[in-house]
Length: 272
Ligand SMILES: NC(=O)c1ccc[n+]([C@@H]2O[C@H](COP(=O)([O-])OP(=O)(O)OC[C@H]3O[C@@H](n4cnc5c(N)ncnc54)[C@H](O)[C@@H]3O)[C@@H](O)[C@H]2O)c1
Image 1: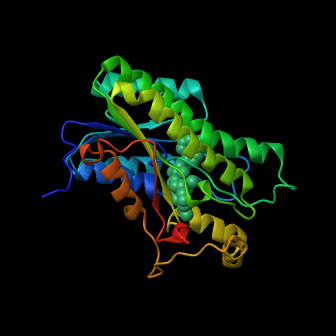
Image 2 (image 1 turned 30 degrees about the vertical axis):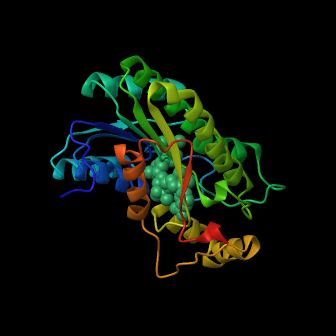
């Protein structure tokens, strides 16, 4: 018996080509939702590691179909308003509605703020913050017009609540996601739309593998040394599915009076 029932609902997931986004998309399907899976499916110039591919996105769509649910795969860059608007329109045309928006897409790279190029700053803020606003804007307009409420969940980070060493642009973007979540929550509440974010600690995903490959394991350990941030529960990697469980709850009616929060999935890191 699934803990949640999203039968008849449609979830729209960004960054669904792999990692946490794929996990969220499959988790929604396991609980009965049809899923629009979207991803950029190409690299960005300042990225330290490769992003998802068209084949990765198709694999996610196949996994949803294996759960017996319908998937619509759309290549979309969350930084580009025209692409976001077109993808939301196509999803609504195809499924008739969107009940849940999962703003998961994002990038991470390491750089000192005093050495960072303007392009690196801009790509981070555009992908990790502006993209959340653009997708929320266009999906919220649909939800308001439809008049049946909805759920918006975004991925911030523990970096949305404190400093990052060699990640000031990431921290600025993720703090922005927390603030944007609060503001959207108070604006959209009257339309029956809840807006929340999750703040994961380090997750075992292709992003983390890519950063380690590009910079070395010691670079990651250095980040924790500088911020003094360690998981309290340290029994192995925190997995994408651990974050999906928070997405499921915040997307369900079990959380109907929860809005404007950042829910840590951080193994206790921020409790100290
Ligand atoms: N991995 C971690 O340790 C960690 C910790 C906290 C928060 N996060 C956040 O979790 C989210 C998911 O990350 P992940 O760990 O699964 O990483 P990932 O790199 O494995 O997956 C991110 C996905 O987003 C896609 N993407 C990136 N930029 C995009 C854009 N402009 N438009 C559309 N799609 C885009 C990528 O192609 C990729 O498929 C991100 O927002 C990330 O910042 C990650």
